[in-house]
Amino acid sequence: MNLLVTPAALQDLKDIQKYIRDELSNPIAADKTVRNIISKYKKLADMPFMGTPLQQTISIDVPFRYLVSGSYLIFYKVTDNIEIHRIIYGRRDYIRILFDMNFSEDDFESE
Image 1 (cartoon, rainbow, N blue to C red):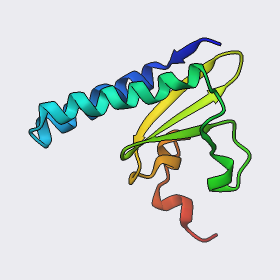
Image 2: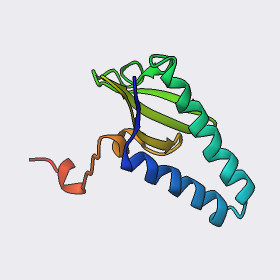
Image 3: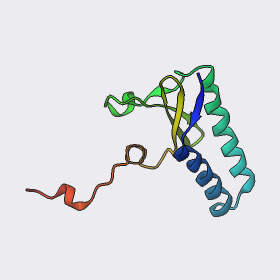
């Protein structure tokens, strides 16, 4: 099985590294965090189903699984390949980010 990383996941890695390096002023931690995340998802090549199915967390049938790497969640799908889709800080609204859900106040107005 091939390990594929989507452009969105690559951008997530860049953003994580930039945030820790620039906002937290810690370039060593930035590099270490990204290396740890990459090391974690590379293990999927040998054990693709080691992550937790996301449907156990949100009670909705979705094809994603996830791994935890420090404070980050690595979301992936197992198809003919292992596809890394997103890498998101665990305290963010990862469901909204993962499924690109954008709500406005109009969505909640009564009829």
